[in-house]
Length: 75
Image (cartoon, rainbow, N blue to C red; front, side, top):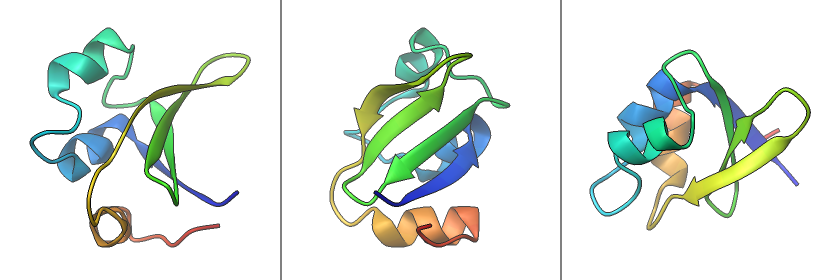
C-alpha cells in the first residue's frame, strides 16, 4: 500500500467540508505536529507510539489536494 505522510497542520489544510473537522482531529489526538499518513483510498492514519490508527477518511477527488498541499507523491 502507498501513502503520503504529512503533519496534522497540513492535514487541516487538505480536509474539505463534509470530511473531518478540526474538533474531530483534536478528539482523535491529532495536533499540528502529529505525523499522519493518507493512503490512495483516502484513509487517514495517525502515528501512535506503537502503531498507526485509522481516524477517518477523505472523500471525492482528494488525490490532487493531497499532492498539492504536501508537495509529495504516493510512496
